[in-house]
Length: 411
Image (cartoon, rainbow, N blue to C red):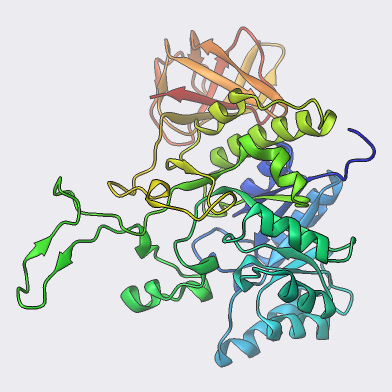
């Protein structure tokens, strides 16, 4: 990497311990995770206090960083529990806390005076004056609102002290509400998005009903399938890495604490490869469409550049369906290899069979194809298929894959 170029951090989601370790192994420089409470992703696996200690040991052993999200907007009855929870984690070697509420920030500072604070995107910082306000209150990193353009980010960068960092999303789901400050879930399902329990009603199917004609529903689309009027496409900026770097963003953030381990591995791996190429030679860097093709092998919606170049239009929404595009199945995870038998131990994740052509990829290793020709169960008996969840298998490969390599199959 050019020594004059500030290193870009690739920041990945970690919904549970397996995803956290996968993100680090597959090339993330840092991960963000939630505890069992107060992290705006109640549906993620999240980490217990002992698991956070284990996670931070693992992260630091790999020379990476771990950021904990405590980014809810608490109500009065949350305060005693939150204060008690901060007391339980205050001695853990967490690198920074992602916070959106000034009261939470104050409570963290009371018990962990040395804590580094990153301002969550949930605080919807959209201008440099607001950013400077938070900097004056001790914030070390601003996580930009998703509604900011690259031009606005560059202006914010120019107006902030050099040591203050800017983090911005580069990939993942887009919230239709302003920086996630949404009341729909609370109103329609009684679950508060700002306290970690969003039901994603922006992805639901809607029709119109006229006041004088109750029970008569009118689809907004002429094809009669209804309309997903708030259903944003997913953000994808892998083809725009030089532009984001030029805007002064030094932490590239992937959304997805609710996503699968396979999703984390695939997306982190693709961005790691692209970022490495860019940082080796920023001036000579050329976008490689193969990285985009890799991203498309993880579950996703159609992609958009979000707000980075202009305000989103109808082209950035999908009005027909909220379904994901799933062209590949994650079928196996490599555990280890027995050199005496020449067989590789694989844990099944989805059904596959002898005769299937699969793709195999690993940390810092591009995918390659193999045909499954020999497969045995734990007892060493030959089997033709692997239909059972997390079934333990022994497979003979022509090219031996490494530990934690992933096996996928095109549908």
